[in-house]
Length: 268
Ligand SMILES: [Zn+2]
Image (cartoon, rainbow, N blue to C red):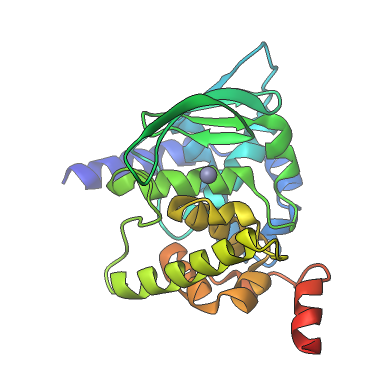
């Protein structure tokens, strides 16, 4: 009943507060949105409007955070949850925007249980205690089909945190099998770790070899930006992300770039 009232209120609000077309139409040319149907774009617009309504966006250092900038951020945030619904981000409230990459205190526990504290320079950070931190410079660079998208990366961490500390195991939908997810990601993770430790080229950013949480976040970026490459490298991961995000970007996005890794693979 409560959910029904919430949905009615949301629909009422969205009808009265649409994103103006002068703000919306420019963002629909983003390369990562290619191939979305008009119905999907309409749903994306509603999700972006709700995102802006429900998240506090706090710019630091006197950044003028204009309406066009807000929509550029919101549409990228809405893309991963296009088929997950309006409540997928309802467990956190704030985005802090830095003008460029920023220094952030980090506190991490290693495999042996030791806690390491220090400062890191980051383009984004999803804090388990609440906000998402983003570098505006990197948000602007994100919507190209180059496999890097700081917004999608950090919001993948937030989806991962829905069932606790980020560990690459977000809550799966009914019908998905934990065993399939674990097998797909552990194969990819160990392959990426092997490439990282042997200095081998990988078309997937080797930051994914850091830990299981980063593997999920990086693969999510590639899934939405360069899905053909993810499917070529780790088809089982692509299949799991297709089930998880309930999208199939291969069917709408063109292949991008020349991948010497695959030229070598064919030659050998
Ligand atoms: Zn990360």
